[in-house]
Image (cartoon, rainbow, N blue to C red; front, side, top):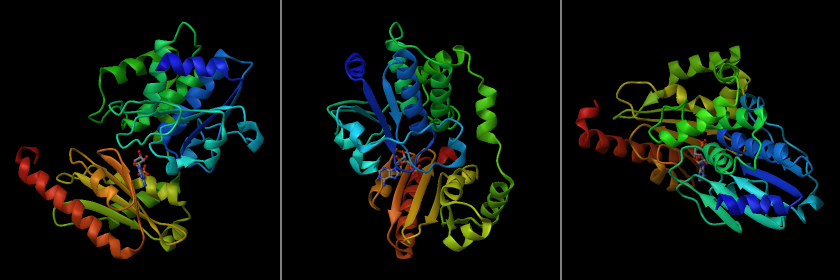
Length: 321
Ligand code: AMP
């Protein structure tokens, strides 16, 4: 399939790359990695990356372009890291001449004239890296591409910590490191934060709650985010600050939206949670999912479902505690 993707890239003079709504490190990493890979190999081609608002930590690698509608007509469109059509940013992805999908989610639904989906791969950026490795006689890996791809891999694997990390991922990362990128620069960007965000982290540590069996959660109301002067994305990104309490294997951030919907970000260790996310207009990976609640009335039910899962897991795996 990688050969076919390369053939299509060669065939088109204009390539437009899309990612998913609410971008994260891996979708921007794979988008920018692909853009810079194509640009360095075929400098004569027009290559665009489409995107909207992004959280500050992604500004480090994101270089988005303004793309006029009429440019799509004879373009190859590549959608990265996106499982379903309704999660693609933006809807013009559908107006190109040919569509390629490259993804790693396990709830992927078909779209695209050709697709490469590897749900066993922990990061879409690693798939793009493998695309480079398998075609390295023909492709040029620039420093910009390598940096973006490493950024994507390291963010989606929790800095190479999650279970999905295997030899393939590490081998892919090794190729990127050996290309000469400065990983300290990348990690500095990921680990340093603004004072206001650290204060908000303090709020989370002080105010998170727990269900009976240890599902930890924090609710970010519009009023509270306004008081701290932080965006919804910044608040939502703090979900992982609840990841290190002994005995808790599931943690959740609820983020009130402007229209009063509530975005849910769920993370877990060992326990699969994407089935619960699917019950609340969401989905995602086994241990990292998102959902949407239509009102606060759904808070109790979703927490209760997660609590039941955690209770069962603890009963079935007493050795973990
Ligand atoms: P998030 O908490 O938004 O970063 O989402 C975690 C993972 O779940 C990401 O891989 C998302 O692509 C996926 N995800 C989030 N929301 C949804 C949704 N409504 N439907 C399907 N997948 C989702």
